[in-house]
Amino acid sequence: MIPFLDLQKINARYTEAYHQKLDEVLHKGWFILGDAVQQFESEFASLCGARYAIGVGNGLDAIALLLRAYIQLGRLQEGDHIIVPANTYIATILGIQQAGLVPVLVEPDPVTFTLCPLQTKRAITPKVKGIMVVHLYGQRASMEALAALAEEHQLALFEDAAQAHGISFFGSYCKTFSFYPGKNLGALGDAGAVVTDDAEVAAQVRLLRNYGSPEKYVHSLPGTNSRLDELQAAFLLVRLPHLLAENEHRRQLAARYAQGINHPQIQLPQVADPSLHAFHLYVIRTPKREALQAYLLDNGIQTMIHYPIAPHNQAALQNSATDALPVTEQLHREVLSLPISPVLTFEEQQVIIDCLNAFPG
Ligand SMILES: Cc1ncc(COP(=O)(O)O)c(C=O)c1O
Image (cartoon, rainbow, N blue to C red):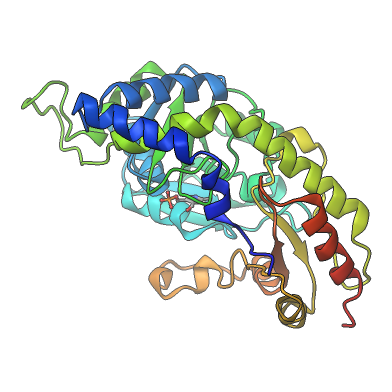
């Protein structure tokens, strides 16, 4: 059996280092906002080429807290509209709503799966005050075109980089990350971060994540409790130095899939520049998705669908009015994620490629 993502094997490589970190934290006896959080924030910020990283509880909170910071600073008002790709993971949309803002769902480019600049331009109205880009599957969205649009219309631009740790970023826009265990940089539980060059935004997010508290028992605004856990920060410090090498292995796997897969019913993902792709997921398209997924499973290969139901078709979002989203719906019917990970070997991958090419469908 080739699993979709072997989290046991991924983490087994670091077991000893994790135990050592646990011992260190236990020995210090400081479990909230300690040295490990600070050190991780500093190392992760420099990996992103940014001045500040603020560790928070998870990726959803990172999105909501970043947007709340913008509201606190008077840069956005509650009720403002924020453009977001319709084919994202639902957290991006929920984060916008949780900050008191209104998501405007926009179709992706069917070739790159990321926000389409042309459709984004069409969706701009006087109520739209920001764009939340998502680097879906790890591929950097069309940042040049979207940044130009944001500048022309004076919109705030944000990046949901939950799937794109370690790529080279464009400009210095505020970013949010998730360190959910399955991510390219995964913790051993929930964790997230906001990354920014903007000292005011960093200070607001720092307050908001910790009860709006600039010092113990003083509360300057009604914040929440969404601190990056000290132990998770310590575990993330173990994995961080290996991220770029792990991403490189993913890139090699992606190149081999692109070279090796050859089937009339399978459309490969288009990648303009592999250095702008973290290959969190390797997502093919096929009109025969259900048959292909069942066939692969019969042959011992586990795949996943990211995502089977489009956000606008989820009961959770039934109240948000949206126009028809045919591109998004078609993608949700056709996408299939193949195994890709830092521990998938080329030999295992060859089995997958051979199996795909022999698909009778
Ligand atoms: C694109 C995207 N945004 C946001 C999130 C939310 O992150 P979390 O699960 O840490 O809340 C995720 C992952 O789960 C994601 O893939």
